[in-house]
Image (tube, rainbow, N blue to C red; front, side, top):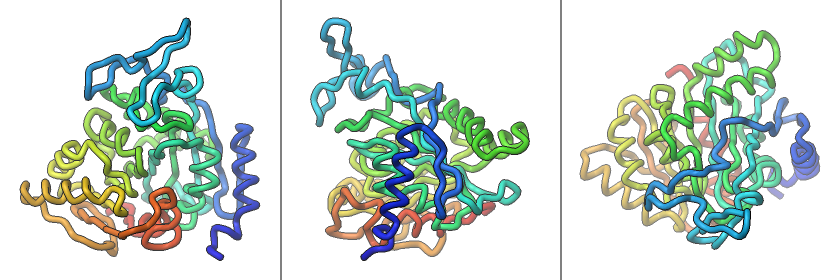
Length: 316
């Protein structure tokens, strides 16, 4: 029995508490809450950058909806109106020490409490890594086959989201609000994207307006497109940031494509699991035929997110 199975009852309790919108805690993560933000990916009433077409492209009376390439028509009121964001502060977090703000972009067919917290155990894996860091995970399309970035497609909205996250984290942490807001607003940011999270990740890198704060990017079986954007970002930040992509056979073609692009641009990279993730470290980890749907919890090891977060070096 894997270790996560032994935590099933606490995790179910955590998910239940989060679904009710109340604070939750466990032995592995002291402060976890799902809260409502003002600056969120959805609702979104703009254009799809790749096509220039309106995002809300269908209507039925007063209802408006979006045609997803994979999922068909989803309605705005049911799928693209959720403003919730999951916040987590592990019990060992120390604001006096160097640390990271981890932003997690989930994949398709996800609800924050059910999937990010309980099934993928993202807050628990952060706590288990012992990294001095906090977690922010916005809800994208609610429980849908859709990778749309929504308002994160708009310039500087990701930076605005990070500013609001600092305020919310300060409130969750407690203590002197002004001081804590300053701590969270200056923490280096690491983007972690799983599966369909590649699209909001690429938007955050290209137009997010938070370039000065970005320390690195971690892709967990998440490269299914926008490969040019990732290649350009890596080339521009090859000395100042890190990039790590672990992948199964599912996303192997685009990872191979990205490696080819970097080679053509004379950007060096390693293959394998690096001992540490520091500025200038670019690495790819092919893990073979493992189930894509379980990649956040079972890949090259149990709890792979915790495994890779242990390799981050605050203050480097």
